[in-house]
Image (cartoon, rainbow, N blue to C red; front, side, top):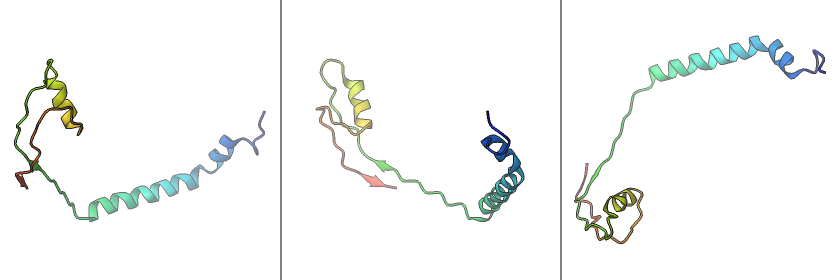
Length: 85
């Protein structure tokens, strides 16, 4: 099979201390960065009126689902934005 020199897992096990130290250093740097940086949150919302005609054949609910995905399935609707907050 593999000798100790050619076994990839054995070579990785021999390098466990440097791997652990590098992981620890980057983990500590990430923790310090997350505590030092200012928290910035941003949210946007678009309010528009709901004026839809139901689709024939009982597809009204599926039409609403398609509208969420941005797909027009033939229903007339107004997509004019009233306000942006």
